Length: 265
Ligand SMILES: O=C(O)CCC(=O)C(=O)O
Ligand SMILES: [Fe+2]
Image 1 (cartoon, rainbow, N blue to C red):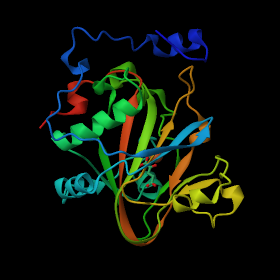
Image 2: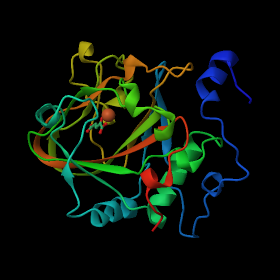
Image 3: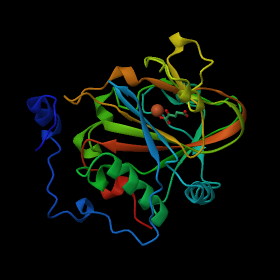
């Protein structure tokens, strides 16, 4: 294992439970993509180095966004939250609707982009099914971390915990509100960020990413030793008018079974 910086011992301890061989499992082999998978030339801007948070502009093309929206029409249902608070609690915490996206060529192409962004060492079966989340007026997702605090959701059979998250803005219409707020991040100084971040928020509210369609936020959920990083606590702020659709791509520490990942279509 080659590691740049960080503690090798901690890194080995964190990944040992998820050791994998690239040779025998077809799901670990590089994806075979059709000729239509062209990655857009998106830009990356580091927002925070610790925790690692990177803003990606033009991460999704217009064609991909249209396709994702068409593909999932009529399939949304009330979003689940894995915190064991019971159905009523779930409804209050996360009032959005969500759906898993069938993995066709275009979705595989987006998955490949998310994997390549993370280097060359993340096998594709570490990705959860791509999820879309839709919010109408008044809907929100209260403060949470994407990594699971309850170990029953992070067993090795479930691929361990969520190492990283991409949250992309797929669609929005007449939207006010609906930003993604990270209260523990320091707001950056340069005015150029105001294109992507709500610069009207008071400094003590942290960073609120505006729902700019096509763009995405990437962040690391876990520390090097595999424990959860509380600093990436975040919320989908209430949509005050209009609606938005976002996309989650979550990478687990280890492989997920085909049952969980679902079929290629
Ligand atoms: O809607 C947002 O802005 C954030 C959604 C989110 O954090 C999630 O789905 O885990
Ligand atoms: Fe989240």
